[in-house]
Each structure stands twice: as structure tokens, then as C-alpha cells.
Image (cartoon, rainbow, N blue to C red; front, side):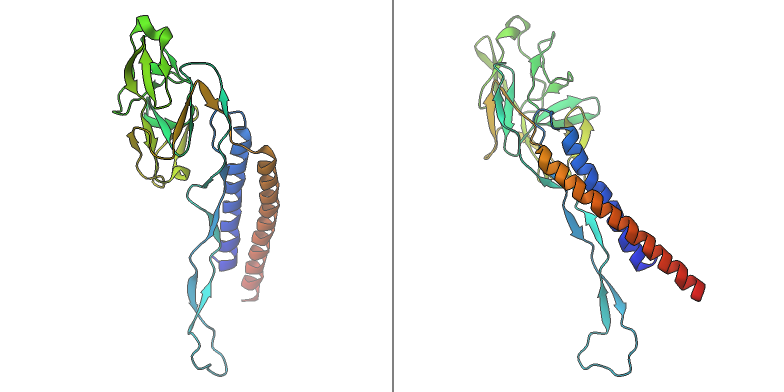
Length: 256
């Protein structure tokens, strides 16, 4: 493929992916504990090509040209702002701030979420809004005595108590690159090739829990809309550049 056409096509794809990031931000402006994302772009490694022959050699000149290969959306994107912590008065709600994630057991395996809207089901299991089991520091389901379910509380250290007795501690996962987590629906994520492996345990430095509270969405609607409009204009320019590159390629073919 012609280098100009390849660069334009790559830019078009990257811009389209960036638009999706901002659109997702806007769609989640009411999602509990949603962490805003900002698309980041990086230049692709340049390729080397032989310089065209000239009438006279230039002493010390490099024999090759460095040709840029365009841009791409970085694997993952920059973690943006977290939402404000808002008291709910619900003793099984817990807000998380900092880089940690709660772990829940889903039919597809362990997933991670920042949504601490928890409750106790009929079997005494601590679950999230989707009914997924919330996991402890040992990666086990957290169960309280059914008779004491109404007294279940979670404190600032993640200790789950019922009837005045501690029964488990919430597992808090740390992920090397949160931007590389893969959305799996229902406000949950799974680890991906760019996120690194999650480590489940107790609270890590820099992560805090707030009992009887939830975090609002971190989406800044005005910022997301501005970014979306900027990338939409870039998309139009990229599409035009691709059309021009294609036209030039056709002309070259006609002249050959």
C-alpha cells in the first residue's frame, strides 16, 4: 500500500477509536464510580527508505530517509478523574478512591469493578448489583450469617462484619496498567494483554475506602464533548487525506 494512503488510513482508524473513548465517557456520566478516560495517541515507528539518487553525493549524509508511519491509539488510555464521594447511608455500600478495584466472581471468571454498591442476598452472600459474588482478600465469596444479614457493615479497612463480628475482608485488586483493562459489561472489567495481571489482597498504599458511600462518575461532560468534537473534525480531515492519497495513487497508475 502507498505510504501516504497507509498513514491516512491509520490516522482514520486511530481517530475513530478516540471518538469511541469520548463517546463511552459521555454514555457513562451517570455510572457509579466510572473513571473517566482520555484517548492518547502515539506515533508509529518510522520506516527507513533509500534516498533517491542525486547528481552529487553529500559527504557524511545518511544513505536512508526516515519516513513516519502515522499514529495509533495507545493500548489503553490515560486514567482520568475519579468521581466525588457521596454518602448514601447504606452500610453495605463502600466507595473506593485511588488505583484499586473490587473483585467479583462472574460466570466468565473473576472481574474487577470500582462500583461498591453491595448488598446481602437471601443466602447471606455479599453481592454487587448484578448478583455477582464479592470476593475477599483470599479470593473467596464473602458470606454472613443469614440471621444477622440486616446488620452487615463494611468499614474503612474493608472489614465486613455482621452481628458485631468480623467475617471477612474485602479483596482489593491492584492492576499495573488500569487503562489496559477490558470492559466486560455491568460496570466490570477483565484483565487483558495490556493491563498486566491483577493482584488481589488487602488495601494498598494510595487506595482508600469510604463506608456507606459511593463514588459518582468521573466524566466531565463539557471536556468529553469538546474532545469528541475535536476528534470528529480530525476524522473528517483524515478521511479527506485518505481520499487524496487514493486519488494520487490512481493518477500515478494512469501515468505509468
